[in-house]
Image (cartoon, rainbow, N blue to C red):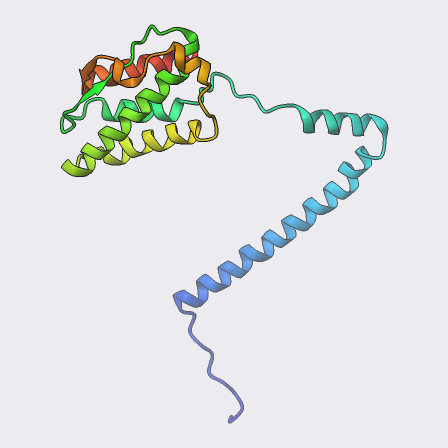
Length: 183
């Protein structure tokens, strides 16, 4: 009995590796079945004029999302920080009833003031520093590639021309401006 090896006990690690191999085999089988299905039906659809037309129409239809606002993430973060008691600053607060043509400079002003809040939070170690950073980052991402039109900026107020208000009033105005923008 020199050549016979002792049967090994199945350890938990060996069992997990065996399960992982089974899942991998199932995945390969599923991929092959999908390949066969697509190869037989999808490509047959593309061989005729109607199939090609449907394919191109589907490919070029723009993606639409109902009631999606580009500022929705900012709005969520504003809701998170509006009750923060450890942020105590006075901020230039743009009016919520500015002309439509001044909407972009107003938004830029709010995001510039968010940088002030972020700086204050970094000093005081606020509990909502990450939310403030997210708001500032998302705002900058929206405006980075889009330079402000010089004719628009002449008609609209500079941030420093607005009244200074406390943090709570600033956030309320910011939320109103974003909601107005999302309508």
